Image (cartoon, rainbow, N blue to C red):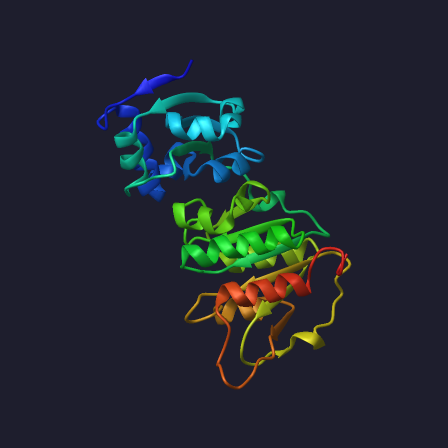
Length: 261
């Protein structure tokens, strides 16, 4: 039977809260924090669950939680509120191992979504979800991106970060150069000095990487120049551009697995 935690000052609860709040601590501990029964159950399909906290009410509603790996604790409602940081929490919280994926794990003939300094965690999560939805083989995030395993990004990805490899790199320019070295065709999303998306020509037989930049400034010029081609999404003159998440959804659909394989 799961041990009960009723004190908000319990060391295990403080540890979980620190993981939730600090990207640096997550990196140091190689763990991340997730909230919600559906999100935890989805993440457990691809990430190793090490600790699970749930209220009695939540486990009665989702009895399948008890089948997950890892140490499990029943927590009181006040403890659940501290873990969530808001009143009326969902009552389920998990600690998961950060996936260990590096740039060297990327293979030829793959489809990759590359994010350079995408700073909004909701955009990062949505882009990861789009990559997973359209059959991409991995997502590459530069150092200045919002953490893909932070609370808001995880919520936006709906657990996709557990289904598709997510690689975090120091420098997107180096990642693009590595992809080109293994034969992957690289496509930069850029408003200027670019061709309309429908005019993008391969070769795509060895894979394709879609490279998307910061919400305000877009891709750096060095990264654009390092890619094989630059494309833009034709849109009405009533708006200047799409946001990163919307552009990513269009581009990942256009270069979806099966269409360019």
